[in-house]
Image (cartoon, rainbow over all chains, first blue to last red; front, side):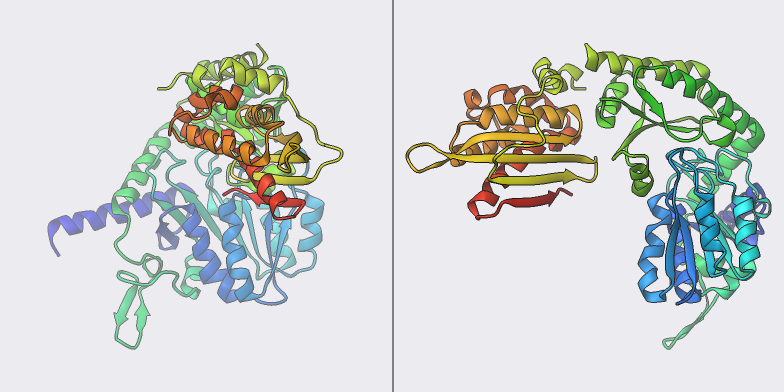
Length: 354
Length: 159
């Protein structure tokens, strides 16, 4: 009841309003979580585990980050639903025929898909997929993993046709330790709590508790106040540039990077090559060179790339390798830095060929 | 910051470009182990043919490795194959222990016997790459243990 506490609450709720506006959600449907992973776990435990059962299909894809695979696997034995995955085609897009075959059963109760791949960059036709899932089963719930999409492509919950959208602060120029579950408040209201404790209750006796209204029902304990305020500041920053301009800049970087990387001897860029069809992560393989060697040498050239399976092993395996090297672009990267990336890769090639 | 040349010494690059004892087959062989490191995706097959030193002690008569991995892991397996061929199994295991100690910064023992293996001292300055250098040597020790236990095949996944 003192000034500082009130100021903190006000800043935290203002952050919620900022997030809600940013993705076109109702603030009552915006739950702050630790990261996108926790948001997906919340849905797995409070939605899939409670509402899905034998006869239902939970449909995910082979393109997902482990965060959108493992939580559903964890609750599947308890709930007894059937867990299916849309395969990925060699070019790094979803196999829409296989998708259709599963959806046509009318048994898909929850469809979860990444908005954009964190490995191959593919932007999925979420709106069309969501509409198709709903047409086959009006009770179906659609979840979109927006961790890679939201920071790079203008995103609107209604426009996507999703019931839930999750994303994370650290890919949106914000702090670590903050994620968002944005969705329809009435669905959240019907769901039981995920974590229990302070803040999420209305009343507590030794025998039991009644729960706070949404979104507070899903925010147990002291919230990530500083991180939420930091995330809102990051959103103000990208709004100042304009998400349309962010996207246009990253498409320009992709347009330069993809052909330049493939011009280096032995380099294959994974995923769609049309910049308009992808977000600004570029995974590539180099014939005869291991990603860990590439990552080490490029680091010494002053270029930070990630080497490994990018927390998406089923997808990377589908690309026919155990690991890839990935360059990620953001709004602050320049065309000169694309040149630096390509030069560092060429230097790596020479280092091992010398 | 440790220098890149410490990690990628010329000897290491030479073994990477011109591997010794690298083959997917070894006919005949007495033991085969498969080691993988799912974190980085390295896969290694190691086959041993066991001989006799004339005094009843089993020896490494021949060794062949094959796999998919970074330059450090593949070069290290090549170096290992050279260093242990012809030794008794017990002695080969001891050389492997010397290599392990060296990679953990615990001094260089049996320097002569490690052969080109001493070139990997620089890798110890890159902690994330130490496990790459150890893969082939761990596979060798596992192959010896597997043979000693009377088995022919063993698969190990390193976490």
